[in-house]
Image (tube, rainbow, N blue to C red):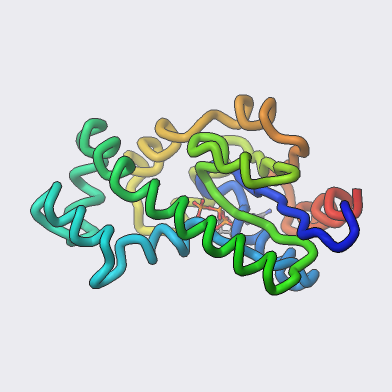
Length: 191
Ligand code: ATP
């Protein structure tokens, strides 16, 4: 890692792969985190440009209704992405600029769609968190209220682990305990 300059790591992985657990640990290690999911919510918050564009396109801003619309129809999913992704990317750029200005040495950009949205262009290095699909489905089900159909539809819209593993500089496997995940994180961060 270059002295004085911020070093940006892009952290990705599919649904329920363990990105948030990894992020919580990295935060405790003093790493600065930029979370694309938080910015995705900010992109469509009350009074935002994203909210009015969605209202115009879908006639509603109700999250549950939108989730259903997108789940049922890929054209609508693409339409929603076309509205939100440019706003999210702009917010990421702003956060990165601010974090660099604040002098953070290591910045981790956590983004489920890091490669799909070409966010690796902002990063010096990329990490992929992988876990078997059946394990991820079980973890997702015990974590959220989403149906198995919704979870599978999200998985279908994300790149498969094998593809992300080819694109990433480092791969972290999370089929085991959280302690094992943390052990690997210590190795990759010091490497
Ligand atoms: P998403 O992209 O869907 O938000 P994520 O990649 O951030 O998911 P997490 O929220 O970190 O995934 O993990 C999914 C669930 O699995 C959480 O409830 C988390 O506590 C649990 N989990 C993650 N890793 C492990 C592990 N190694 N052992 C047991 N449970 C785990």
